[in-house]
Amino acid sequence: METRSNLERLLSDGRFVVSSELGPPQGADKAPILKKCENFRGCVDAVNVTDNQSAIVRMSSLMVSAFLVQEGLEPIMQLTCRDRNRLAQQAEVLSAYAAGIKNLLCLTGDHQKSGNQPDAKGVFDLDSTQLVHTVSEMNEGFFMNGEPIKPPPRMFVGAAANPFAEPFQMRIWNLRKKINAGARFIQTQPVFDMPLFEKWMRAVRDEGMDQDCAILAGVMPVRSVKGLLHMRDNVPGMRIAPEYIKRMESAADPKEEGIAICTEIMKMLKEMPGVKGIHIMPVMWESITRTLVEEAGLLPRPAVAMGVAA
Amino acid sequence: MKAFLKKFALFVERHPTLYKGFLIVENLIKKPVFNCQSCGQCVLSHNAFTCAMRCPKQLRNGPCGGTRPDGTCEVYPERPCIWHLIYERSVKLGREEKLLKYHVPVDRRLEKKSAILNMWAGRIEGMSMSRKLKEGDDKPKSHAPAER
Image 1: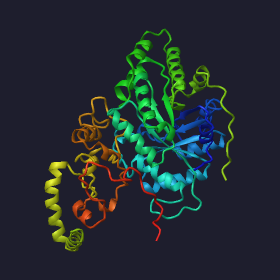
Image 2: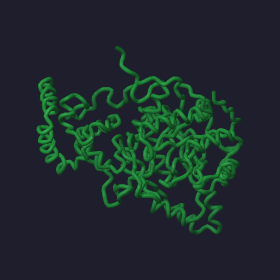
Image 3: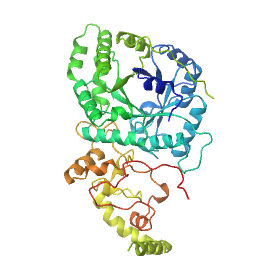
Image 4: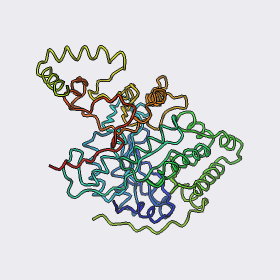
């Protein structure tokens, strides 16, 4: 089904897309969002808006995505299963589409225990695969109970995949399940281990899954070796090749080296068959996005034809 | 047989004391053996007889992205990732194909009820001991109401 997402249009036109990520603020002021928006204007095709990432309370992804629409940027709203039951999730989808949000990334969400309010109740009413299916069925015009939605949303539905976590084969099957459930694009965890990502991508191609959905490979710029080590040791499911740690350690200017590593990975991903785009995750370092996109040779971005919400 | 079991299940459900007794016996077996979490809609036969509801995120359709390299859980590093376990056991038992099954969302009304009686009463999909996946089981069904 055609949605009115600019991201989908670019992908179906065969363009190599670039997305980035914006973390909503922890305060009740809109100004920091508007400031962050400037980092993305003209250098990415879509911007993920995280949903209480790492289980830390922030402004809601729905509202911040709506601000992005007002700013003329294309948001990819993230929707997790941790904080809402199925009623709230369906309500969010309706609200989001009415606010002009046309891309939705369905995630399970980090467990509340990993956040700063570990005493919270985790909802996990649906899992991410079921959420993908729910949203695709809403696109078809049906709530979960089979009652009609008039008019239905037309969301471009995506999901996440982690090529680096164990067990490898299970990850491939999981991706197949998400595609069967209706995922049209996939964003991966950041790539810091090229051989493993190549192996995963080969398996994805062998199953023809790169034809069934658009794979956007994740990358993450790091500023210091400390940041890299923190990810290796504290972010489960991350794999970091020792080569990058060594390079960051011996670099005179770790920031420059971090950018160099990131653009290097981006260039390799761009050439990899089956990869349809790149998703940059500049956690707390949004200002670097433009530099990365430029150095990877991905500027200028195709003109944005923002479909105005009906 | 099917009709008889359904009748039996509905009979037990009409008698609260009987139901309680049935549930106690059922739990006596499945709690210690499978570490059952009482979702009331068992999918053990698809998961190499390993209860997926033990996952801290209660994921029924596969692991989250946080499985550690040594196969432990991202939330509780001292526990195994239950999906890692399910994968390993499925391979050992030759039941990998069944991992492709799409599991529908949990019906929260059935929680803490007898999964066996729910199965016999036809409220949930039954167990299937076959190693093969039933045709179409890997694809979720449309939410559109069935044509009458």
